[in-house]
Image 1 (cartoon, rainbow, N blue to C red):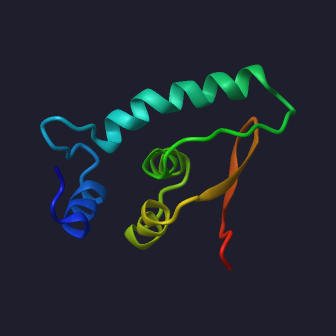
Image 2: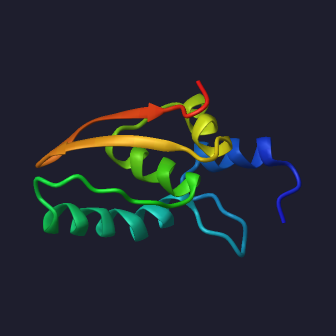
Length: 102
């Protein structure tokens, strides 16, 4: 169980291989999720796609395509629901964080 979330998140973000003994690192999460994203992109060309997952997975996916800083990671990790719009045109183009509460 995580007792100090701010420290855990900072360690987690600064070292993508960091994880608790019974947890998953961001690198492992990317290894599991990116092939799935690529499979969907390959099979759904020229379509709009909605994928729902937890905020840490969203952060790992976005960071794979476009690295960002710890401050943005914390926005994703601590905002629910969190929505990110990602645009692909054969390759990743851009992403936009959408704040439902603004």
